[in-house]
Amino acid sequence: MIIASGLVLLSGCEGLEYVTHVAQGQIDVNTSTESIEAVLASGRLTDDEADKLRMIGRARAYAVEIGLNAGSSYTTYYDAGDNPLAFNLSASRRDKLDPVTWTFPIVGELPYLAFFDEGYLRDEEQKLIDDGFDTYTYEIDAYSTLGVFEDPIRSPMLRRNRLSLADTIVHEVLHNTIYRPNNTNFNESLATFVGRTGAVEFLTREYGEDSGWATFAEQRYADTDAINAFLVDFVAELRVYYAQAKPPGELVSGREAVFEAGRRRFVDEVQPTLNFPDSYGFYAELPTNNAWVLLNVRYNLDLDVFQRVFERVDGDWAAALGVFREAAAAAGDPFEYLRNWPDE
Image (tube, rainbow, N blue to C red; front, side, top):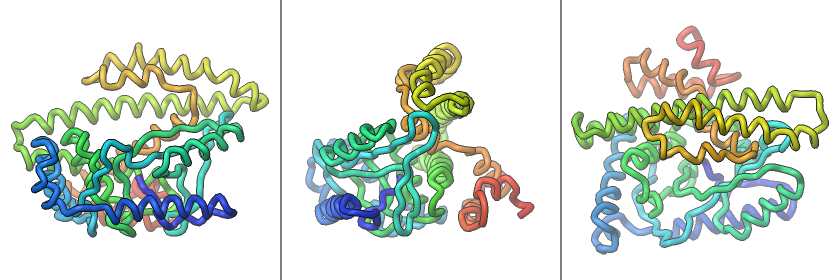
């Protein structure tokens, strides 16, 4: 995830208020960091947390080794205590899959806003709700400032398992390395592919071929792919539904039937095929909310195009990242560039 800390440029007084809020939140984080050595020496971490903290350093070194630009990311530690680090807010029209977007210098257009203060978040969310939008918010424990600020290890990250943690480190560092303004779907999907693939390589090296991490990752990511395939089909069904020549109010009032059919299909057809079905039970309760739907497909679009390139270069990270960088810089659709590579 990208957070445009201190770089936001919106119109009007509300834009200035948001700039001040995000900039101050990021300053508070960056002026409250500690050295990793000091945190480890303090004795306040559990053995498991301390081990994960050390592992992050090795995952960061791996990311640098394969050609990612880590900069100063994950070289310090920020203790959020029992408080959430930050929140994400997304919104969409209710009568179609059309996200609300905000424009930022450098990073371009983004389909979400990040907040450090929950009260401020809820006020802004309520304005969107009052204007007739679906909204969805959730806590975040990691994000990238694209190297503009030092991105510390945030204490909530240590609650993740080792696969998720390694994936997150590589994912976020990828954002420092390759970025295409105004194309969140490409940026996040590329980071998902590199994070997943890199995490498997790193954990296999870290704990050994027989450690079980590679098998666990294969099963976990197979579940993710199955769920994503379900969501892609569900999005297609929603687009057909919303394309009907009906008044917006009628589309909104009638969409619950489409969502309910999706819930039943997940329970009957998808969940029984998963390796860890109990871990994904919340999809059986997927909300009637377009913002939720768009958020959940944003990070996993067309991962096969990245895999194809990676296989064509025989798993050579330098070559693969070079192609991904070309796609990010190319005119037109970067996904299409990768589909046509190496003809380009």
